[in-house]
Length: 576
Ligand code: FAD
Ligand code: NAP
Image (cartoon, rainbow, N blue to C red):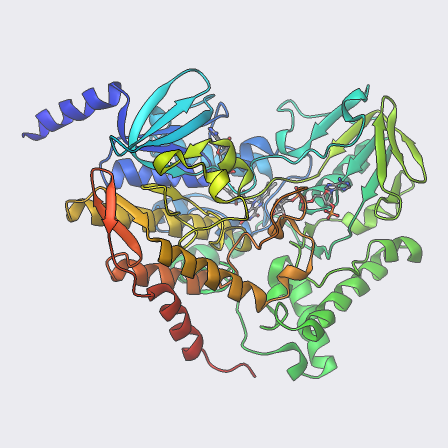
């Protein structure tokens, strides 16, 4: 067939709703995936996006103070997408605010002409695998229907908001907002009494900004966090030049380190140095700002005594900044080790509690009992307010996936299969769901990393996998049960080596009543995980059944993933 005839045939299939790939979501993940599918592999692909524009997280989270916690120069696409874009784009602040990140993603969409293959304002409501045709049947809320060989979820780990079922919640007569679906026109809190529920990364960003405007802010805190000073500032020209000159090495480091950050990861334990030296190391990391404090020693997530040194360092910073010692103590975490819940970065958060118009309420001691027409009633107080801000987070990692109504072979529902918690192979695929790929799915590093690095790694791995299938005359791939079981066991074993299970964090699903308690992201490290995935690919996708026309029943499992992990760990120098 000539290339013209091939193009005509592709166009006809596409207009009949028969695609090579459907991607759901147009944030960082969906944009890059579309580019790879269409422009690298030459496949026909359509992205469905519920919002009316690209951006994902940065489209929805427009609350005051919203900005990234990864430094902007590495919270972006890397040289994998384009070295030119890295050189051309200049971030105005060390931690860019939401509008600037949204601008960036819009620019990427324009630059690669991605919008023409994105159907906006369209929600995927069902995605069912047809055993007879070996294709995914995807339905949308506008009544649309397409079929595709490959279904790729780019729906984000933090895209389904969590709005707790407080009794009387809907009786409130004032205005209420969830930070994750903030009004585009913004909110003017001038002269208003505002209750903010939640002091995670979002609340910590929003509260200082709301307090600048409002008549009074009641901060309803259930659990204090170890907030770290971000050290935000405008990017100076010299910093910008140095970064641009070193971008290749910067990105290489992000791909090799544990959390996808280009920070040094010294191979030393916290208790191996003297108290003075430890304090100096913490102080230096604190001065430099951002998440560096988490990478000062290599055992902070492994050893409770080591962790306590960092935890106490951070509590001391709170006491220094908050005038009232009782409030400082209330803001000091005592129930979980540092970094077993995601530590927020803050910009003037603690000083906010020195203001006369801010009241901190302990809703752990006196829980919220109800929302009533005039405000919030807790076990020991009444807060009459004009507005309520829910900074109560997300049903993370699985919430949005389940809403897609995914059904695999024999009509098996994803939610049903994962009723006791996710079961995946490498966090990217799951048995019984052929040709389904999940970008930053559960049991991959995902939210335990600087996410663009993990997103790119998944997208590139999926791209290579699809190319491999094509080169081998195949079109169907699916994890083997034994490979999946092995990955789940490995994931759980690595989790148990850390302190992470100790905290009631959203990382373990503790924020959603009834959600199975598991560590959802993989904590083996971004660099290690990448090597594991690459090795699985190099071994002809060991552990994946492969075939054609919907049948992926032949395949081998030689334990490549676990063997690679053991190799990496055994080769690592012993910690001092
Ligand atoms: P998203 O950006 O969440 O995009 C998913 C898209 O899928 C959304 O647009 C959604 O509308 C769409 N979608 C979902 N379901 C459907 C459906 N059924 N039909 C159609 N469309 C659907 N990570 C970091 O590494 N560093 C940071 O500094 C950082 N800051 C953050 C700040 C905030 C406020 C939040 C909430 C998260 C932050 N994150 C950060 C995590 C952030 O989510 C990721 O960095 C990244 O933006 C995720 O991109 P994504 O494309 O995978 O998902
Ligand atoms: P979150 O971390 O889950 O915090 C939710 C807050 O709401 C917590 O303080 C929680 O208290 C509280 N809460 C929930 N239900 C409650 C209830 N029934 N009663 C009282 N309090 C309740 O959510 P988030 O702050 O939106 O952040 C989620 C994640 O998004 C972050 O961890 C981060 O990964 C990402 N994020 C990143 C940035 C950034 O990088 N700049 C900014 C914002 C968000 P408990 O702690 O007691 O559960």
